[in-house]
Image 1 (tube, rainbow, N blue to C red):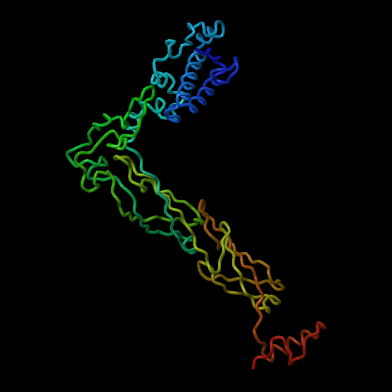
Image 2 (cartoon, rainbow, N blue to C red; image 1 turned 180 degrees about the vertical axis):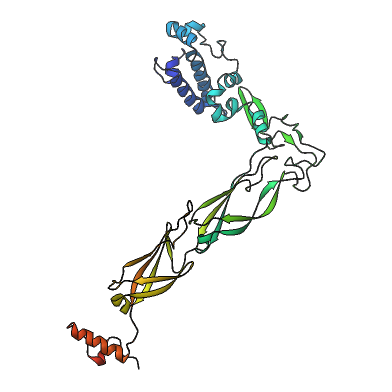
Length: 377
């Protein structure tokens, strides 16, 4: 019979290791050599038991003190493990240290935790939140809009209130798994737990299914609701509508509906936060002499004053004609970038006057017959 290995060596820790280090080391080995991950592997089974034995001794202050002083002889050579009085079988390990690796393999290491899981599955649960995308025009952002949306989702069956059982009846405890939701089989040292195929892990079966939902407890439902889209929304704004999402499970509450707003691009105006921007063509004479221009904004006509001597590319600000703020009462501004507009052809008088201006300013121009614009007949 081979000599027992040092417990600190088995866990791969030093003699000064604290409880957290011991637990972390054991958890790592439990994951590596767990029977569920190594079915039929005798070497892994031995290492799993060896690690449990080492952790059992070193995680207990009194046992650890005795081990540090007397070694394995402190426990009659058995070390407190199999054959040493510490564990009787694999289930004993799972029962003792399920908190160490239970969250990896399920409650109690994947064994005996099905009953709690079945209760959770059958408890009323909130429905999922839903996401819906709706499109509006830029002009709708000015005053807001009431938009009707339609979608289809699962809802709680009102006939059976989500139980899946016909009125006057109720689900019964699954006879195959006795309500645990799992079927447990013992194979030597190994205890294998699988989801019950009869009840699907719920721990209950339905002998008389509800006709409207066919025993599912849920039905498809077409929804049609009106959504108030406030003024000032931007592309990507999400509106939360409480209790209008997917129906709850087993009579639980509905989820919420999140409506994402998409604002369509406008052919004239572009938006930056609460401000609007557009290009405006202005006759070249008004750049030189100034004047009034009427343009169409999103909410009606706007009068624009072009100052004398304005240069092409300059920007004119119209205060308060932009987008309303979503979180306040003020509106953004409207900006026009001015582009110079030339006539396609000059009249005879226009040509004559411009040539006079060119002559005054000593600017050389082409001869009349080769004019840049030609003349209007």
